[in-house]
Image (cartoon, rainbow, N blue to C red; front, side, top):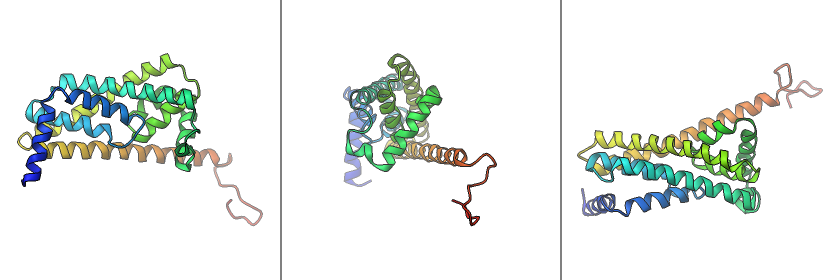
Length: 223
């Protein structure tokens, strides 16, 4: 390992052993609820890997803080949706955002519990769902109960994922952090792709006429 790698490793290990690791995890997780810059999955999984390979920070403290931060961030996003709606800012009016927000509003009407629990695992999906929940007047008491469950499951999942890599690569904590964060982010992207594909297939089926075949024009061509 070169000098830069040693310096990075030492800095990460020092942060993991410091009390400041908890505010760092909390703040980054809260911010990630409405600013997808550094996926919080990578933060939680990375420190969980360090916990298993070096002993710091303790998993028994890391997981609850991550869960509380996830619920807090989701609640703040809900309040933003309640106050400003889903169309005030320019990025909300982009085609991709409009499609995601439309899906979120429809899903909240049909299956609110499942969509709120699932969205916590999808980086952009959780933003769309939480904003839409606030904008459409979804009852906050029910919202916060579901996000508490979703946040706990999300924190446990990423903690276990990181801990598994930390136990496997106990003698190489930096590699454990890198692999666990990459896998955590990749799984989030994969879930997003699967949900998007399922959503597209469902929309296509709903667009079909009763006989299951695409509508045709007078020349017999599909329209």
